[in-house]
Length: 492
Image (cartoon, rainbow, N blue to C red; front, side):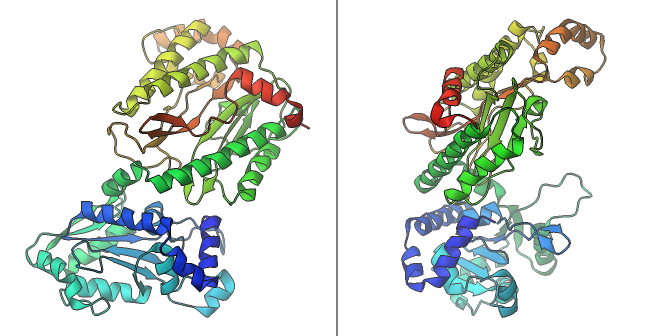
């Protein structure tokens, strides 16, 4: 659960006069526009239903901090469990119906205030808000073509006609099955129960529609994304100030996340990765439990979740303040690869163009170091093990349409990396080709062993070109060493 949104909801419930103002604010206007675009793509013969995320158990009777389903948050801004949004594009007036849980004094005594229908309407901009005990009766009345008294019988007539003619659609968010024996997710089970009782409709996955919408950030979202990444950039600089030989990884993590809290983000967008020495070669290292040693690199991958949107930033820098020659060798390749990726990030190009541009530099650089012997193939992936770009937004690995050309409004990362792990050689299949490769490169692996470097920034494609949202964080070797040596940022 994003605490910043929860705080906003509390303010709305405490200040009714403010709630009336918020209902007409830019956020609510943007939410209305998102729902309108979704309904346009759904079509007038459809009903779409979106559920809130369930609570998740952390331990025994303690839950994790609540995290709303990203699609429901995208459409409503409501960060509260037991919430359902129902869209009926064919209705003449009441096309959006929001259902929220009923008041419960005992529950609210334990867990805090729940939005009333009036407050939920103010927060989301959805004018018709009912309570959850009305949800199933509403759906049954709609699909049985009996009319729905809660919003007026004439409202759902267009959908009833589509049912009668066998052309109606129920759109829900379906979980992708891994095997045919996998049970459907909750939305799929709900759709199955409806199909057992009613006829005249087919079920479609609403995921691709929302993925396409979420891939292009609205002007409002772009403003929030810039603010979110600015907070994360400040946090990275604070982490750089906190790093020093003898300090612990968790001290850097604490310095970073302190900046989130002090600037209203209230949470991370993903668990922070703070890895020193050999830990810098672990892609998703999360323990933050090692003491940093002089002469090592520290890799930090961290970003804040601000108002439901997160960027993604990684920096790698020397704990002692200056790169060694070996560390420079690797860092310069990774930085050059990112620069090549930035040049390829142009409207009309595919995201694969960014990957290809980075790969070309990584491959050539690793061949030059002697860590790769094949100058044309994929051997370099032994050390450059991950993709270099992904979408960002409501989720740090945000949704999007595969193969869609880059266009203004898209937000993404460029994050090449090289990780020299001796274990990577041991894991290779023992073919004659691999054995020859291992014999040739093992001396170089000893030289570069445990050097892990990733450079990652958050980018927004605009009408005038690509914008590096996290460019204020020192990135080049000169910038990093200058920042770490500046008295005002000297590490203690």
